[in-house]
Image (cartoon, rainbow, N blue to C red):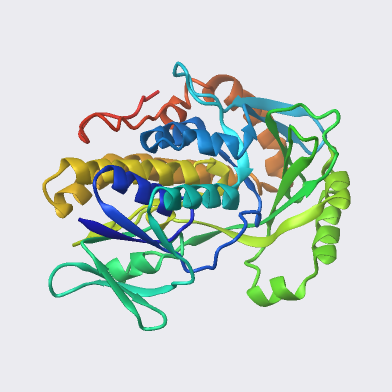
Length: 402
């Protein structure tokens, strides 16, 4: 059996390696040319995502590409510490979450896939996919070329071509009202509590920063505003973006202004989307994984981890079932409830970043109570304690529920 995988981000190479372990010959079709893995901003891969990589013996590679992050520390605009939220799983020998560049992890995983003999074709944008008359999956390239395989996996993100080829009425990503900026400030880590994201609910925008083991500080800003057009993004200089960010955080306590002023911007005006309920995940030999099927807002911290889990569960179902349709149905049955719950969780977190003046006052009081009594390490076990058992049956329960 062979497979085409559309998309070479994080979900694509993990799916390819998992399918390879299940005895399927996979080939990755990536629309962009090769890159050095240093574009864009940082994210955190939590314990459940790292643990899922054990199924393909790739956890160590991911851990080496990042640095430990054990908690989120929440602050208000006056510099008052509101809460601390552990990112650790309660399970024995659980991996520690790692912060890294998303593009760096994707490059590491692609390189490992190639080392294992998996073919990665760069610069091959797919225009559409279809089911061929013989029942095989077909990918049609923008240059009119074509490729076929026994099955095709859409790992092509929130703006997925595969999703709309499977279902012409499929939903599109929803703009959540925030644009994302990211940067790094060299040598600024002195005095910052390590191994933690510090998250500031500012008066006009949301800011996060973390010290690195090398002594630098990585940071991001979520700015509530209308969707930014590609034309505006191209026409605005890095200096102009940084000056605007400085103005947004000028009235807030904390290091945001100093970090932005002394740093460099690595991601500018990235419109943030999520994708909730996608009614159809598969048709014939075509199936979706990761953000193509369900994309949480970055607030959830689970996008990449969910994509990795998807890849392993899908490959295991293909290994264990006697047909592609039954394998796809089993994969969806095991995944849908969990991922849609996480998307809803992320949407609630995004709305908390833009509450307005009255909302800020209420939020500070409520947040202390919520994180003291309701949102705890135990209550988040359903998210971080999820584990995929590669050696077990695909019908086994694979999550610890709080």
